[in-house]
Length: 155
Image (cartoon, rainbow, N blue to C red):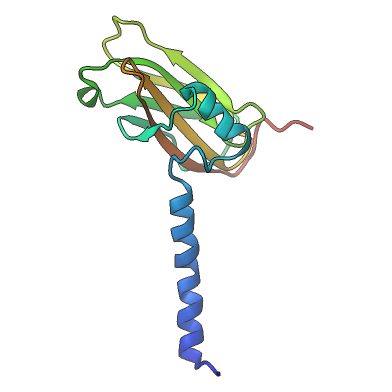
């Protein structure tokens, strides 16, 4: 069967859409699909519980010029927490030598849950912020970033 030029062009144009759709599905918070040290770090923090999407927000630039010092902010939608309160926030990355970036603990008297810090990123990768609430539920937000100048590279 021969294809017309129009069919070939339309088929080639649809390929990036198919690849993009697959990539969007792959960036969800399915920790069972997350492999290696990244998935293990998530499951260690959550004690094997699947984190749900929402209630937490990870703010980081999606295009990073220099991975040596990258500003990151993590915040919680406090209105969505009631009656539970925030106990801890973990920040995990996919491709650095150490997948656990940091864990921040909040006391019972904490009035807000907001963290701002700077991290190093080895290369383009996924980062996930996970919140543990007092009702033992886990909430997450995952972001995929592109790093043009890498840091944290071990020889």
